Amino acid sequence: MGWFGGKDWNIIAIIFEKRDLYRVNGNRSKGGDAVKARDGAKKHERTIFWAVFDQKRAFVEGEPGAGSHLIPEPVLQKLKRELPTNQTVMNILGMLEKGETAMAAKPLAWTSYPKAEMFGDNMT
Image (cartoon, rainbow, N blue to C red; front, top):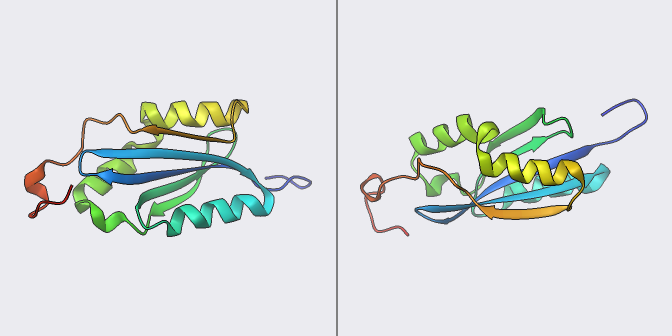
């Protein structure tokens, strides 16, 4: 953000698909649309974690989403720590920053998906 510019954000949402599969959704938006996209990511019922980055990949804001209860807390904390360096997230941010696309989604490649016994029931 600058004196004459507005928000030009890359919004990342980690979406719960099933116990061992999350999806990375990315959206590049500007101005009021950026705020709407961020708020949509925050409120989506399956968003585990959402984050906003600027075009230089600086973290602007982020926190657990409405679906964060779908995974164990230790897994959420690890995801939060590893999000900025995760290869899938970095690939999505790269596409958005280069202007290749305004929206992108990929399955999250991650070695820390929770084991079934962490859930206590048969959540899939």
